[in-house]
Image (cartoon, rainbow, N blue to C red; front, side, top):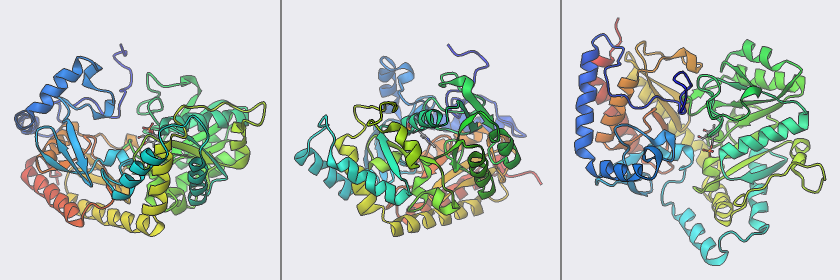
Length: 457
Ligand SMILES: Cc1ncc(COP(=O)(O)O)c(C=O)c1O
């Protein structure tokens, strides 16, 4: 069992419906949360039953920690376009967007056709090289300015292999990362190195957006790589500043460390990722999520000389295998999504829509304990006693989880599917009217709970 003082395995504590609020009148918040919980139990009996059954075979009825919420998670039955439907018969606008992987939604006709064609005409997993992997690689190299790329099955794997490559290439072992960063299942840096993290003694953890701190940490002799998100996604949609990210890049280049930009989430923020917006040229970039068209996917790529460590024609190359690395469905659906749906003009327009959505949310949140962060179509919703709006790093805000829980449950009642931590990843094709309905619903929430959310003057 984890030690009592070990860091949490997920970025948020379990849904705690007890009276731990930090408001002036904790009992008022606690009563509101209790009432919301009672309504939740009443509205979702089938999810409750399914959870009990699942708990007999899965620890905590769960196989993705993030998706566990007490008293039990909602069990979804199906999805269609930008909507999901639960087992108890409720319909939701899906703002979870499979944590950015669901960019194309649940039933995009172009993706559906591609999958059916692939199953019908190609088959599953041929146990061989297929031409489609080179086609997807070529497209990714041109869109993301990579010399070479390799595929894997998840963003976690992409980071694992990028790090291994960087270490092998530099002959060094230390890796600089930043607190609040999340780079995959065994690469979370919430409050130090997570208990089930890998290579725990090699990490050097800096503070996100701390320009001078990053310079100091990176400019040492023994740093193999710096691994950083251009915007911390799981950490709360906290954008990295241009100055910070360019300092990371400059310092890494100065000492010959590999600058690895984790674009597993942020690659959808422009036609060529966040790096294009910020003018960054990472040595390696890691990808995943939506670039598999909705199927399990990961990729890492960048500089020719670094990626050459994975060239099997060299006797000293690193092995990089994976049964499903080039599986037919992800290779076809990823390519089709990127070439036929996610055209540059679509990426630009969709992210502009996200920017105006976020601005609308920020406007309704003004003067309250809610704050809104993010970039483009990725949004982070925060609640804190101070209503902190400047959030350069995880350490800058103490989230009020009771308010977050209340928000989470009441937004569900209004028909919006969110993560409990308050992150939103918009699905392409979500009508503007649904975004406006959400802004209105948030405004009504803040109005309804004025006594709990208004900032003291
Ligand atoms: C920035 C970032 N890197 C890596 C990962 C890991 O990706 P996967 O869940 O596909 O392993 C995630 C997942 O959320 C992520 O947000």
